[in-house]
Image: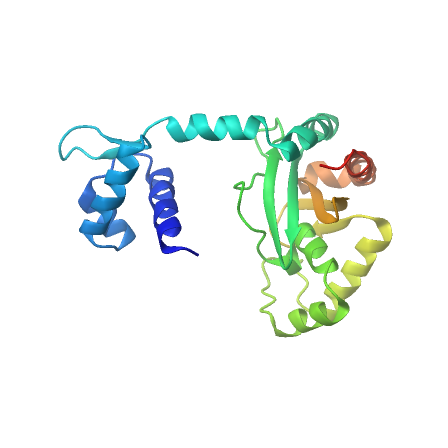
Amino acid sequence: MSKIVKRTLDFLELFGRHRRPLTLSEISRLLDIPASSCHDALQTLEERGYVYELAPRAGYYPTLRMLELMRGVAETDPLLLRADAVLRSLRDQTDESVLLAKVSGQVGTWLLAVESTHPLRFSVPIGTNILSLHATSGGKIVMSTWSDETRAAYLNTAELKRLTAGTLTEPAAIEAEIKLGRSRGWHANFEESETGVITISAPFAWASATYFVTIAGPTARIAPKLEKIAQLLLEACQALETQSTF
């Protein structure tokens, strides 16, 4: 990654984590970079209108410029415009969190989330990659897109960490689950990544790329209506796939 781009993103994410004004010395310490480099970056961001200094030595904070810029981007994102209505309808039918992700090589990235109305609900940070591929329904979809040889090499060399009592850690068992998911059209995570949580995911294609939708929620709510939720999930993915290309 470009050093300049990385440093700019580090600055913005730092404010996102701390959510308060930060002084030059604090930024330098928290990012472990020289104060002179921080000053140059802050000066550029301030000149472009992305941060402002509250008062001399009172700290810096982002302006609303980034929010306004990204709001305009989000409002015209062709993927979000296409998927949002379908995902919201699926959320309304199941009242569970519904998420959209894209597979890129050996990575799955969360792109959109419509959360359940229940106080106890599943959520993920948008823009993050899926972790623990062996223990998640989305991860199994990611692995299902690989060749048999690539998947076998991964399962035989990766650290298949046990996250719960239900986590599958034997390559043969995980391979069997992936094949089962392919045959029924959706992949499952029955408390494999987190105790008390079930997620199910189904893939669909857009412009030769693989995307997938995940429904997630507490076991107590998902398990009794699993077959109905799975059917709704498959119908939603079919609706998304049959829409016109970009």
